[in-house]
Image (cartoon, rainbow over all chains, first blue to last red; front, side, top):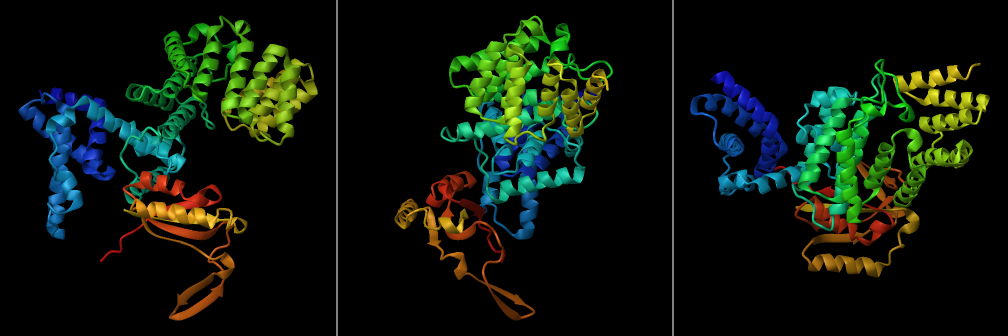
Length: 416
Length: 110
């Protein structure tokens, strides 16, 4: 019986702890107090539920228990401070009459989750702090887990989170979903955090493994949550983009951990369910006519996923989508990607000309993929010496083990 | 809650925003009950830095730190939270020429 209840509590923790936390932050007005209260509440559940049975609405029970635990702590503290709870601002926030039924109300609880996301991704917080705080508070990762995935010492990561929470408290960053006028900018910040988490998982910029699965799936979970809570076109576009990329996970590395280029991937290994879900999301966003850069990137990924093999890809459409993306979001990296698509449509010489222009402007000179693309164009043009030099330049700039092996392999293929 | 909005400008841009526009923006904030105080400052060459070390007063010419943008003025505003403070700061005219640092005010401990 007691084992059974423990199992139930642990399941409820997984399913509900983030919702309970989000609501407690609103009720108690402080991240640390809310976290402590939530843990107290789950501890109380472990003690009381085996005796009294699992309540009908565990979430409401936990929120209520957490709130009373926090009031208890506050009371004990205030005895020392001789503060009158009725007069004290914080005390009133805790003790104010809140209808217990309202805590379980689905809409309020989901609003709390959205408040939590927007607060963690507030642009007044440093970008790396936004990412850390989101993974910690919204996804429920431990500080140690976050530190490990970002290859950062745990104390540094802990500092980052503590500092962010202190800023939320001291500068009074509100626990609010932004108003309509602010929403587009604030949503951008949230999407940026989610995509950053995804990319950190998908193309780890350093380290042995090409992909770090956990972070990508956390990002997709976040993306799904956001689309559920706030079905804005760009949120759908980003989720679609991530799903289509994620569909190729097993196809993009060999059993020995080597990179497999897109055109050489075994397409039967792609996760078809992800591709079609992603494509549907991108189409919905495009139909809204209020889409942005994530949706266009999702559309590009969808076109790539569409062809039976790389030869059947509609490169003309892809070049057109890159043109649209560049208009919205001028960036040399996007120009580089467009150059690769142009090379597929018009031949390597056309791609090379674009890359040379970008490099002549002084941009992307330290960007390994610019040199790798240039090397590939030279190779396809039969200019072996130039190709080798460019591959070596890319090799000198890469920090990722499988990429290094891939480039070394290419250099070896060219002979000496 | 009170926030200080510290306006920073490059020396060449001190008069990029007409005084009349700054005055109007201040009046507007005052009418909404969001302004506690606001002043524009004389250029950086008028600054004097004062330090007290071991009871001795030292006075030096110029600002404490050498930076490209200098403190050109300040607003002390009243806002419910940082979002509102950011909204107000974004309407301070010199924000489009230089930058505005928004800092919450700290209550002194008794």
